[in-house]
Length: 383
Ligand code: KG4
Ligand code: ZN
Image (tube, rainbow, N blue to C red; front, top):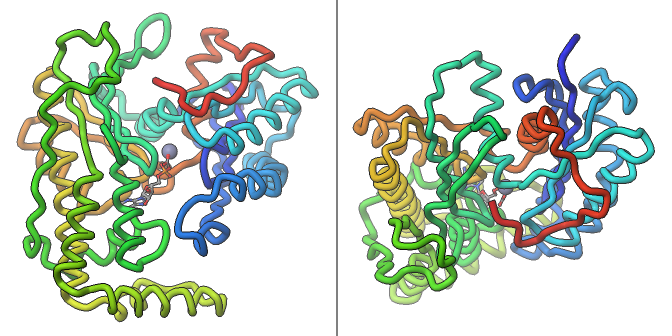
């Protein structure tokens, strides 16, 4: 088969992933090894543990990605790896391995920004569906455990260009899901379980005050000037949930739930959605549903306000939180009212994966934009 075969490697957080993508438009293989089980007992990602787990998984994960793609180390055209942002130690595992492999195979290596990867997850799948209708400029909301960013994205002759027009001032939206789940005794990661439980609660039961962002972010650079910004803030809602828990005396039932789930995990029994449901009373379900509704409405309102202020032609919503059912429905309805097409990645490509890294690398491959030999991890890398 002709085309350019790129082997992508991703290790920025708690997923060790490798994938083969042909010419940025066809997913050939996609292997994701999740470390959730290793981190679950700690209620969040432990950086040192993440590096150790990546070290254990990287060789078999890459081998499987090549085998699934019926490719060999020699037959691929190029390698691509996540340079940042992410956990420094975790990133280094992927980078060191990719560098060694590229050197041994004498193949070019491309360094990719993880956030650019999330945007290209959408492009990859739309190209695969032969959708040639995407119009520019695109406004991309990248919403995950570590990030909540709005980018204006355009394809130019020199490659892709991105302009950040909004970010979270404090917690990322996925981080809020994870922290709220933790404080309600629902374990880690919070997004998928809150997504499932929310359909059983009344989302109008608890009212959360909207985050007020009166001043510009002091971290904004001077060149950002006076252009409008569309920033987010999600640490306040977490505090509101905590206060609600205290005021309504929910702590004993939370402790009981946390202990019951921990006992199941200790017995190697993976809790199922019905177990979580059985362990939640109506008050907890209403709180969870109201929390999710508030986050989804805030994300959509700000993103759509930005879309109309910037007169964009298309909306992308991507990153782990884009897997959320209510978020997808809400964005679809809100975007339709504005006459704006909205695209999401499929759920497997919404959360971290390496296919998005291989896809984002393809335009760089065409442009000969290869990584310098001395490049290293950039934990706080910007897009
Ligand atoms: O993109 P991702 O895999 O990693 C980062 O780059 O951060 O996103 C992980 C985040 C976690 O915070 C997780 O709770 C959230 O995405 N998430 C969800 C859902 N699935 C994953 N949040 C809401 N609803 C979901 N269904
Ligand atoms: Zn991510």
